[in-house]
Amino acid sequence: MLRETSMLSDSDDIVPASHQLKTIMDDDILLQANGKKTIVYFFAPLCQVCNFSIENLQNVYQKNPDVNVIAVALDFVDAEEVKNFTMKSSVNFPIALGNESVKADFKVIGYPSYYVLDEENTIIARSLGYSSEIGLYLRSF
Image (cartoon, rainbow, N blue to C red; front, top):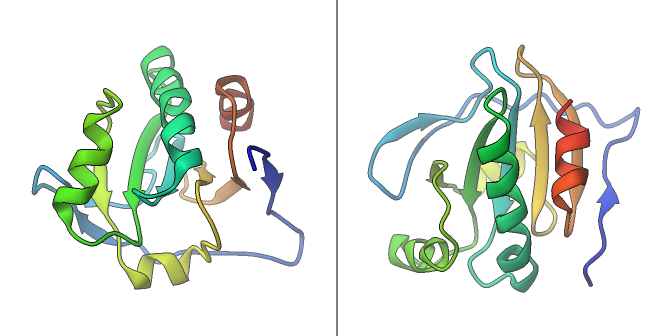
């Protein structure tokens, strides 16, 4: 199914803890906005929809210097699986290796999931499923 659905409701206030994760390049990254709007993209390497949507995310990242992007891999076997997935799509934003704690804190229920954080690290939008480039852009501004 290549459909996007909104997952944000008035009664669903997620305030995720700040997580420090390793990237596929073995760097440390904090999963937070750091004073700049940030799209946090959760994906799984075996997710077919993720293969299509990550290119849209890359386009938003390249065209909008005022937006940070952090991709977080979940439900993977090992870092090599994640590296192989990202090598298929020429992404140049950080790819973090997530864990069950991150998945639980952000209440990720499927892939791909997008969370937009404002400059103060508050979630202002989130969605599940395929999102077009324009859809990602509109939620980010």
